[in-house]
Image (cartoon, rainbow, N blue to C red; front, side, top):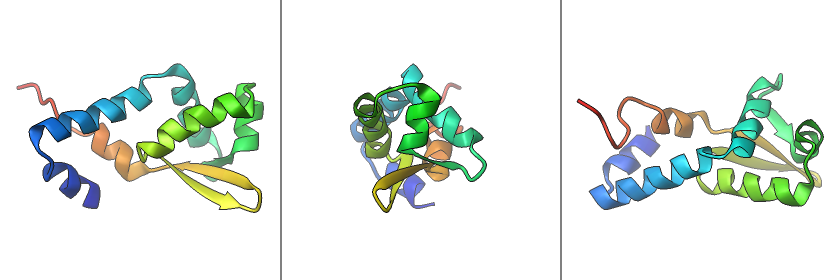
Length: 106
């Protein structure tokens, strides 16, 4: 897995920075709701317009949260016409939530 190799090649300080960014992106109720709605969708991706409706949120506020998730590679954005569709990057989620995370407790 490329992501695991990338994280394994980071210095200890860079690894802590990586996980701080990942957990920071996940430590928000709105972003968790976004991930939940995408995971519940039949084809595992949603248009920003669908997320607006489901979360009862303005696109500008929603875009802020989507950008956080895209910047950390938790979501993958794909443009179809004038709309962006978002899907969860399963490999990134598995990396962040695996037993091999930065702070193993023995």
